Image: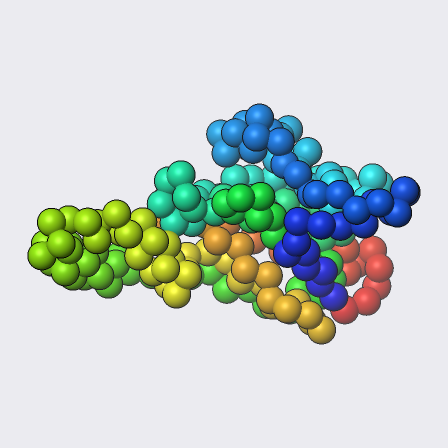
Length: 194
């Protein structure tokens, strides 16, 4: 079972009013500096009050600085969750209950193909006096949309949860996976179901 929210609008359960899901810029700034309190604040708007947060982490920037999407992960006593914050207020939330995680996959692609693409782009931009280099951040971001680095969690009866991470922060995704495995086993023992 997973739930996914890719929207800037949600119904306020207590008042029935619609409002934007917002992450204050001050909290986002602190969260990208790996402030665990700020990251926990981001996740608390999606999880129930009686869940215990075990682990929160900033996992990096997908794309180029300033225009990429920022990735955050959370592990509670019940679920593993991911928030991606993009440009112009885009917020993506995904979670999966621990007892429904079937398998996991961590991937770190080679940088060689990225270097080839950047080299080709530089050569193509020479006749335009470098104007095409202005699009280089989008080329790199497109590359990472195809060749992703991070953790994929297969959830029974739902969509896979993809948690992107910067190459240099892949050990954080690995730490999340180790904690998730222990928490999953504890949750299954507690509930008695697989």
